[in-house]
Length: 446
Image (cartoon, rainbow, N blue to C red; front, side):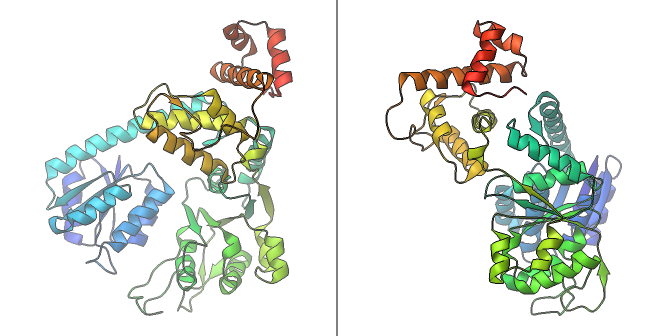
């Protein structure tokens, strides 16, 4: 088991290594870039993180940013914050942001060993559960769920492109899962052991974005008190994911184009030519060709990014995937909130199927999660989802019967992993009748 120690005090790092070195493999770092590089390289089971890191060791900002980036790259990461008693408020803030726990300095060796044993045990259980889920689900692909023809086509495309190093451009509406697709390409490729470094180009102010991407030299601008690596450099040997690429400012488009052409760049304020072999995957929900016409996006950059283009379909075009995803989210969030055996009412299922889902999978996920938290009974209603019960007008008896039949057939197929005989036996009908129902209800056979 590997432990990552992040502290700018060499004495503390040495003491912790001496305390824990007999039981664990110890990796150390003294600042945010070093911590992120060590995390991506060694993939530690637990990270012990001091919040006060250079260049501002008296401020928790760097430590909290390190925590955020670690969790962004791996939401299951186990990070224990180590702070002084006077910084307890900051430590609690870190726990609220996703840290597993915190320890107060000076650290009690027995306390830290006990906590590490507990965390490592939990991490092992979680990994066993994820492995079980991966092996037991026939309709998942790198944590993406979809049995529709459209998504199966996306999965096939990802399998092909993942084995190459070509830049990829992911297109799709907000919430369709572009970052998950990018991560799937990374995991399926030869760079899977390297870092996956995401950045939202729209979430960072323009005056900071160049430094965030390419790094800066000490003294490059006010506040640049130390040299800092950028994400292009951090992603070397792995994948750089540029989300919302359509919002990239023109000045930075030029520098990104040069990097894509030559794999070379300069830090802000620097003159030295640096190299990085990071693979670039970009994503956008904007119409880049329209932006090219208006001059907001460079045509030469577009063609560099769009060597391979993958379009992710909106949820409204994915057929039965909507109900499948809704059931998956219901079980997932029910388990997380200690609510077992949750079900949707027929009215809720009708509302789910009728809604246009402008926010796509993210909207569905958020609505189900909120409904699970707020619901007072085990049956989730359309009102719990904050959806109307369907389109205008009253549902006919025929429509209600077909919706119920469709739900029961789909649930039986899911339960029996697509085995027709077993699913038909559970519903008390013959195989030919089951096939007729599938054809009538438009349910595709995998």
